[in-house]
Amino acid sequence: MEDRRNTQVMNRAALTKRVVGKLTKQEAVIGGIGNSNWDLWAAGHRAENYYMLGSMGLAAPIAMGVAIAQPERRVFALEGDGSLLMQLGCLSTIAAQAPKNLIVVIWDNGIYQITGGQGTPAAQAGTDLIGIARASGIASAHWAADEAEFDALIDRALATDGPHVIAARIDNEPGKTQTDRDPIRFRESFMNGMAKKLV
Image (cartoon, rainbow, N blue to C red):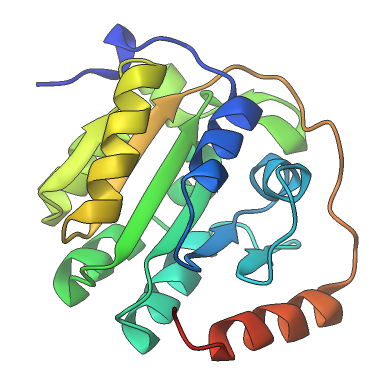
């Protein structure tokens, strides 16, 4: 079985750019609070991006709702390990609802980075978020051992039915830019993006 300890430490911003670079079919992306959405913003704004501002742990639940509402559209959640731990029950709900078009990407650096760098249970007690996802009933849940495997897992998630959960162990580099603090504009932009017909 894959293990967090056997994975390479990667850069979250670089991985985010790799994900965005693979999006060619108007896929929706929900960026979790802090670095998750700052990196998404830095990778290039798209109408299909939604940036969480202050609602810790809700990227995956919101992405699940979008995936259920728009079953023909692939939907990503980019979520930090600390944020996912705040709403851990969403993994069971995702398993129960089983949206085939949902992809949850977990950025695991083992700390609550934007609140002061406190260690998460993943770092302190060996809590395995992929193990929890599998135990919740999500069969397609994997650690990415390195960048090549991360790319392969994203490609597979874009081409096969899910839900999929992909976790990457990342470094502690802070986001280089911060998302504009304009939730109304982001809401309107995302709603317009979701209203467009898929091509």
